[in-house]
Image (cartoon, rainbow, N blue to C red; front, side, top):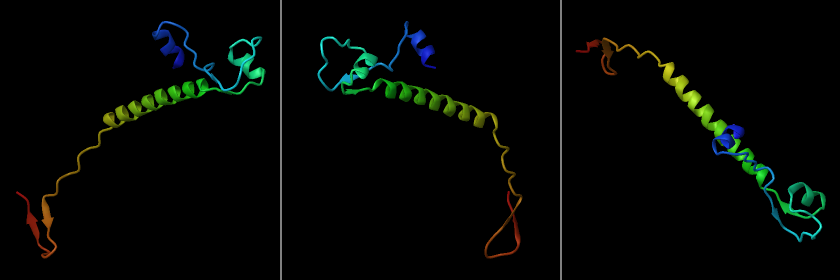
Length: 97
């Protein structure tokens, strides 16, 4: 689903490499996710969580719409209306007009 969204937005969108550096990055280390992680610098990698959250939300919307449409298709038959009614105080049948 993410490739479809990135295509609609006009490019290759990838959230998995988003991060915030929590330490000091030396000058010889490039500011790329793999390089910073390999150097052992503390980072807060929120990109993968963002991607998983988007995928979960889209999947939940698809499942919800699927269940909604299925329930609409499988409409139950209405229960038949009884022609007679029994009251609590009387054992006689009362006819409903």
